[in-house]
Image (cartoon, rainbow, N blue to C red; front, side, top):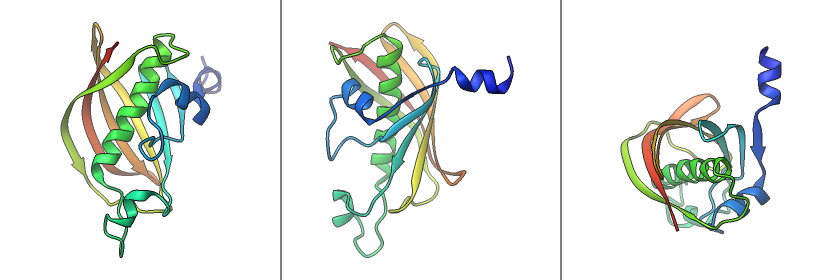
Length: 154
């Protein structure tokens, strides 16, 4: 299969699909779109960082920086939507619970005006638990990475 044919089979989810898959709402919904989805194996979440987000009022107002914990949460939300879609969940009958964060590294600050891409790759699955390696990228530069796991529950 050529690269063009492979790209044509990739899925994406807009904000309305994300809202259907996740229980999160403003100000804790941290992903605007998910592209390049291949089942629960790989996907790219997109977050457009804007100055009017509430965390910037108190997180270094003179030089606003996106809190690292929110970058990791956005990784988990990206993976959560991928898992829900792969399980065939069109509505939210189940929740995905964050279980672990390992090896989190924050390499560069993320600031308003940045477009963050969360590249999520599944590393393992056992029953109702998924493990992912996530990389947050801004303009092709690695800004954050972590290993995360989550469990699908009732």
